[in-house]
Image 1 (cartoon, rainbow, N blue to C red):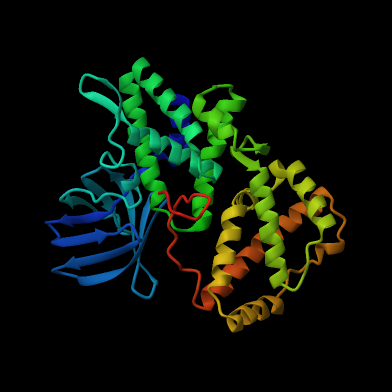
Image 2 (spheres, helix red, strand yellow; image 1 turned 90 degrees about the vertical axis):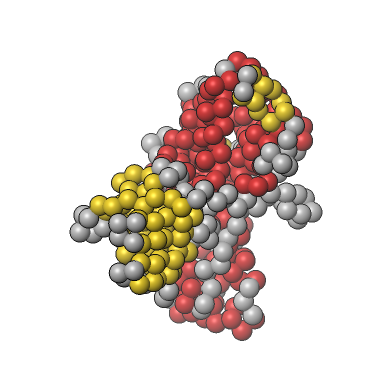
Length: 378
């Protein structure tokens, strides 16, 4: 189990920390409240009040005003459950102390002790319960993008019990790391960001489990749903057959909006070249390709939310500046495919910009798992 969790930890690193809740600095008489939805409220006897959106990224805390204009930027030099250590652009350092206890991350209630209290194994004051095993199953479901059936859940549960009986202390540490990682995943609402985190984890797990030959039941279950067709060892990015198929579906839909068509023959040729040249693509192009499923779902959701008139306007906007290459008759060699990937990345940005300018694109995304009938499981 340690190998599987290490891969998750390597991918998420300190990002798993969240800042939801209320924080204050009594010396400066200021208070911040951060929500899981990405909003904040600020109050200070000296500076008054403010509110807007925030972004925690790359060791920095970015604050935006109510009109989504950049407002304040802090460097986050340290974070614990009870304190945030910050410095502003003038390198003035200060600390915010948590007020009360951290609120539970929305989504994690699906793996609570109250929902799955059954004790699986115990040693002294330590014990693992069904909620812990269900959390593992949810993590694998996230990676493979499908619901894990009960027969595979039982394999995960048995493996967790065996790990606990072998080394209870390490198992409890790993469970806490997994819980922190899943809490972080539940805070993400940008479909591309969700896709990139999934790819980071899956790539590290593939590298440790397959390339370095560290077998585990957790990987065996993951692998049974994951058809890896290309791997970039430098960046530890995998390309699965499902990701490729979904990306081509997304590409076909996108180019329909541009008034162009992806034929079956071109799709087949493009797929072969993408697999063969995956490692040679730019990093951002590989990441976009590996997020095919979420990109397609996002575009479909945005278009479904439009009226017929809005869809027509959307397509008219795009067709005013179509991609600068008509690749329907292109010679599909490696250089052409690399060029097309860069163009496709630009086309994705253009579509999202048009959607945002039309008043969409800022929808609140929640990570949920549904069964075959569309019922929400978690």
